[in-house]
Image (tube, helix red, strand yellow):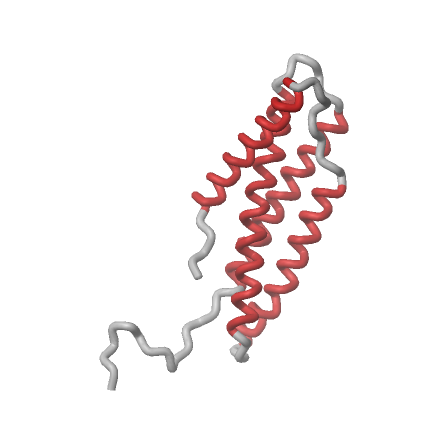
Length: 154
């Protein structure tokens, strides 16, 4: 499994920012109130980050101690970490798009809305960072009995 690249995360963040900006613009054009994320959303992102870290930590510990671990357990933890980093990038971009739209309006934004959007962006960035660290934790060393693809078979 290849590691998550910064380019993919950046593209997803930009797409999320465009979606957030466009969503608030669409709401404003149709005469509705702008979208403000719930205060529970950043908390939820931090809980996901803690879960990802706690699932990846035993894999790291077993690799450091040299004990054998089920590779599928490491793969599941790495897959969750990758999905979490992608989700975090999308949510950070979406929150940033909402925030840019709100701050670009001629009418001053309510402080509660700005705080909620900043909290969303910060929570999403924490999720991305923790997920990338957890993905690093789930890197298993090569088994000594694995054959190299270019090695001659006997």
